[in-house]
Length: 105
Image (cartoon, rainbow, N blue to C red; front, side, top):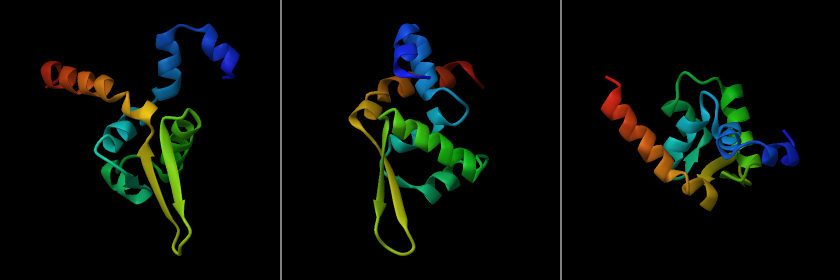
């Protein structure tokens, strides 16, 4: 979705476009506790395929939600961390976590 179309829809739709999907919120939840390497995220999310995790990370990076840092070493080391924009989602994730604790058993 291009920037013009994204701004034409309501704020909730824009947020869902950026962080929606099966894995993005879970990725964000894990990154709230700090920087993670790709394989750390894979271990924390064993049901996600490598391809899907890569896709979701790229999309979050494109939207400015996370940083991807590549170290020039062998084997390659890549770390993911939240940007300030990504960190601002903390309150949203806390509310989702609280709601899940209170309403889903």
